[in-house]
Amino acid sequence: MLAIMALEDHGLTPGNGPVLVTGAAGGVGSVATAILANLGYDVAGVTGRPETGDYLKSLGATQIVARDEINETVKRPLEAETWAGCVDAVGGDMLARVLGQMKYGASVSAVGLAGGAGLPATVIPFLLRGVNLLGIDSVMQPYDNRVRAWARIAKDLPMDKLDAMIQPATLSDLPQLGRDILKGQVKGRVVVDVNA
Ligand SMILES: NC(=O)c1ccc[n+]([C@@H]2O[C@H](COP(=O)([O-])OP(=O)(O)OC[C@H]3O[C@@H](n4cnc5c(N)ncnc54)[C@H](OP(=O)(O)O)[C@@H]3O)[C@@H](O)[C@H]2O)c1
Image (cartoon, rainbow, N blue to C red; front, side, top):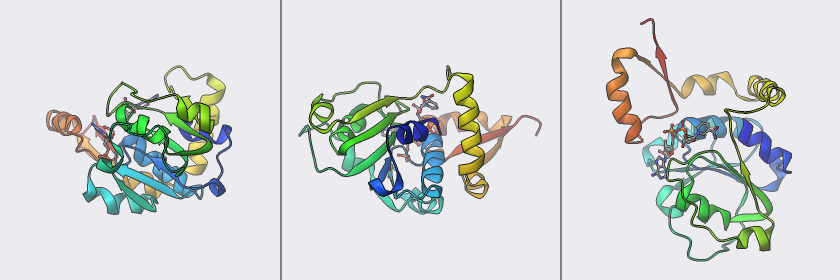
């Protein structure tokens, strides 16, 4: 929600064009996809798991982008202006590549580093296209912005979509889930019932 609010604060509206969500089948990506779609955005989800395509479409993604298509080292600092905004949960090569695909004046919310903490990018998208890279931190957010974000989640995240992205688990499932998470094989969010 914070990532989307930051994009909106920098001028994103549904009329601007498609919005890219990287790591789309993960926790951050699933929530971002569902909220953006509900707000009327055309959402393109990047995933390394083609089998999650139907799931992402059920959350509202209109376009599925294969991870391999976009997860390459930057070859050209600027490519075709494609995305009006981006919620990036991946970082690394993918974020560097996406910067060169942003439309003029568009913004990327950098949320995560599932693909790496490096950023092998050039400054050209900032200088020639006025692209903005917005840092998102959920831990130290000021109180007022937390209230604003929770109010927006209550309004803009459809509950049926939230249900679809939750996988229930018990404490005894955790060792296997840990392995699955590290292999990038968990979809959406795991909710552990500590009383089960
Ligand atoms: N800034 C903040 O306040 C904040 C808050 C929460 C989380 N985070 C960070 O955001 C990131 C995502 O969190 P999450 O909870 O959504 O994690 P997650 O559920 O594990 O999802 C990460 C997703 O990234 C994709 N991915 C994994 N490894 C990749 C790789 N090597 N290259 C490209 N894509 C890869 C996968 O999506 P596909 O299978 O669809 O490809 C995976 O599902 C993490 O780095 C986390 O630390 C930051």
